[in-house]
Every structure is written in C-alpha cells, then in structure tokens.
Image 1 (cartoon, rainbow over the protein chains, first blue to last red):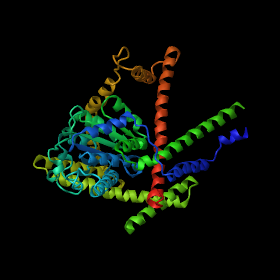
Image 2 (image 1 turned 90 degrees about the vertical axis):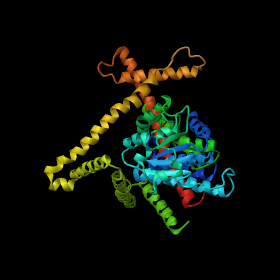
Image 3 (image 1 turned 60 degrees about the vertical axis):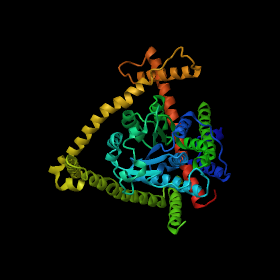
Image 4 (image 1 turned 135 degrees about the horizontal axis):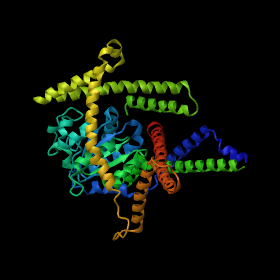
Length: 293
Length: 218
C-alpha cells in the first residue's frame, strides 16, 4: 500500500527527468518509424500533387518561433513538394515580425536545399535554380488582419504593393496574371491553393472572412493545440484538409518521400506518449486503491 | 558556418538550459533568461511595428492617387489620436484623453459591421448546413458513415441543450443534459490530448536543436 501511496506523490522533477530521457534517448537510435497516413493530410498532398505545373501555392505563416518545432516542418515539406511539382510559392504573414522570422526561415531553407539538389542533378527536369520573384515571392506582413484578407480577395496589390525586399509586385514574373485570391480558382477547377499555417486562431479568420467570400481552395496546417477546432471546417467542406501538429507534418514528409525533422521526432513522440499514458494510469490506480483502503 | 552563427547556436543552447533550470526550482539564471527574453522581444516588437507596419503602410497609402490620399490622412490622424491614451500623455492632458475613443469607436464599428455579415455567411450558415446529415437509408454509404452522422447530429443537439438554462435539470431533461455533458467532456478530452501532444512536440523541437545543431550527434 505504501507503494500505491508513493505513486500519487511522485516528485514532479522525477517525472520531468523521465520525460526528458524518453524524449532524448530515441533520437540517438536515429530511427524514424513510418506513420499511418490520415485522409485529411493525404487530401492536401494529393491536391497539390494534382495541380498543373506553375500553379500558385499561397502560404500564410501565422505563427512564431515558439511554434516552429511543429509548423516549420510543414512549411518546409509543402515548399519542397511545390517546387518539385513546378508550382510557385507565395508567402505572407499576419503575425508581424514573428511570422516573418519563421516564414522566411522556412521558405529559404527549402529553397536552399532544393537549389543544392538541382546543382547535384537530383532534379533533371530543372536546369536552372529557383529564383526569387519567379519561383517564389515573399509578400511579408501588413497590419489589418481581416481587412488584408478582404482586400486580397479583390486585389492583392491593395494589400501588398511590394514584396519583402521592397520590389514592386507588378515587376515580378511570378505575379503576372495574379490579381487576387480568386485567381486560385475553385475546388472543382483549381489553379492554386491557400494554406494557412496556424498557431492561433488566424485560421478561423482566413476561413470565415477569406475563403467564405472567395470560395478558393484552402487547407490548414496547425499546432496540435488548435487542430481540434479546425476539424469543424473540414467536416463542413470549407477546407480540403488539415495537417495537425508534428504528426501531420511527419505524414506529409512521408508522402513527399523524404525524412525531415518531423519524421525524426516521431519515435520520441510515440515513446513519450506511452510514458504519459502509463503515468496517468499509475497515478489514477494509486489514487483509487488508496481511497478504497 | 561563420562565427556569428556559432555564437548564436551556443547562446541559444545555453539559454535553453537556463530556461529548463526552472523545472528544478526558480533561480537567478532562469530569471535572467526570462528578463532577457522580455527585453529583446519588446525591442524587436517596437522596431518591427515601425519598420514593417506603420511606416510602409503610411508610405504606400500616400502613394495612392486622389481621394485615397485624403482617406489615408484621415486614418493617420485617427491613429495618432490613440496616443492620448498613453499614460504619459493622459497624466498631463487628462481633458484630452477622450479623443482616444474616436479611433477605438471607428475600429469597433468597422469590426462589428464586418463580423455581422461575414460570420453569418462564413461560419453560421456553413456550420449549420454541415449538421443537416442523412440519418437513414443512404445509398452506397457504409454503416460507419451512418454512425458518424448520428454522432454529429446528436452531439450538436445534446450539446446545445446543455446550454439551455431556463429549466431545472431533472427527469428526462436531466438525462439529456448528462448526455450533452458527456459529448462536451469527450471534446475536451480530445483537445487536452492534442494539447499534450503539442507541448511534447515543442520539447522534441528543443531536444532536436540541442542534439542536431549544437552537439551534432544526429
């Protein structure tokens, strides 16, 4: 019985230590288990995969450095997939400097790695490396949130007249024929997609104020905390799919055919989840048995 | 890797340990890291607000022709009025503090107007429509689809009834409310599970940084 009592009074520092070990040690095995692909992630992947080359992938990076471990692998994976298929990527943020730091870091990592692979001859279909303004554009940040989304439905240049470097959008080849978000087409006749990478509730605003007006194809990638609230939009058919947390990012990496940071973290996540379940079970068992006594 | 990147990685690693030290107990190293974070964030925030928001927005809006330029100046003037809410100004000019209410009133009015139309069109209608699901004899549908439809419809009805506060929770209504609470608890459980997953993912991200970027072990 003393053992049962001890189960309910484990020092929190011991639990922290166990969680730390359960997270760290699996990394040293350098194994990344395959994950089960969920339909909501597969739909996003297939949608981008089936778009004609040169389609527009607009990514709204609405998160900051604190959410980068979960969302950055999504941004990286989607950018790489888009570049492989010959699509153009457009980046914006509603999260001021936080979103700029995270978004720019993600897209530039993908561009850097993809360009290296082109030089190594791993993408024989491409002869030239990715060029900013041609293959990808970073619109940056504009304050206003809802107002920016509504403006972009009528004219992107009313919200962003220049890119993040200060170059006029009209002078960029990637912006030719791209006036507003309605140019992304519809789910039935797609010419692109908007993907909101969200650490908060900007995704709700995108759906309610942006997608509902423009009816263009949209998907969301989010931290696990906010993912459950986004499933309502999936059920209602307002978005085509969701990438939920690190697991969603790992699924996307697996579909895209590479093992990135999310896939590497899956073994740690699985083991630490088991540890949490065992601790919850033991704690409750100790509590109930001690109470019966 | 250049020297500045190396310094950055070492600094980030040491600050990570400084913050983690709080898990053992509160200490001066953790406090120092916390204060450093707040100070740096505030400085970047002020710089970014000026550099990325205010200056470009005004500069670009002033480049618009004709009436847009007038509208921009009105917006800048309204925006400047909010400064009267600052404690430093409010202390010396308390009689002018009311001026800060005009931009707030403008933003509130615009927000309400936009919300009324868009939330009904973009949230209320599609979400309500999504609960109008067939419950019997769907051609080609599996039993799982039917089960899901029943759960969604009953879940919405019972959860809504839980928030019906005009009757005492007794008898049959009490049973219905218990089912409503059960649906809510399942939803909260799912959210809590996802939250645990999210927090552990952040830890995984930090450990990955330490082992990959700092120690080059993986």
